[in-house]
Length: 257
Image 1 (cartoon, rainbow, N blue to C red):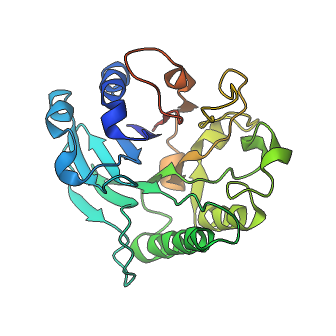
Image 2: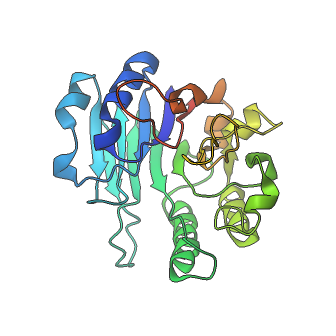
Image 3: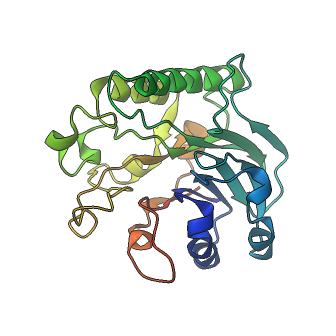
């Protein structure tokens, strides 16, 4: 089973690139983040023509997540299903062949100490509570997404420059550690313990050619799934410029179980 995650930074802007990538790589499921359209505006027809079912939890202009799958999901849940009145579309779960697949788009946080930073920390707490309430660590669960966290300095090309940022601050890294501590395995790190692989590069300052990136996008799996891992990689090639449209600032992450 091949599962991927990709922050496409607007499905409208990246539709052609996504369709080309699906044709070349044929994942069983791909979790998308930051689709930036409401459900009704999602390109269902093009995705279906490519052989995929689209499950969407969209939002205009910002946010929005989706899961594309070769097979129709057995079950779907949008949002945390808790008592919070949060209106942001950032979490989507489907069940595929007995495997729980979750697409998550963690808030950026804007600046440490801001209201958006507090929202980010609260959102991460809710994600942990959701996992504990909904699943067990012995179940086949794969949590994918843009976490807007570089979990340690192996995930950052220039650690000193980012140390106190919303992506690397000790408080958000501790939140990421708590999430992993519930019973999740970072499959790219398991496959590549040396680190220094990145999934996001700023569009500015030649960050991509210089490989001055951060790893913000993860596939996290419970041990029953991680034990079946045969490969995990970041498709850096897809971040390169070229083709009819500009690439997303994020590259896809792919795992094979």
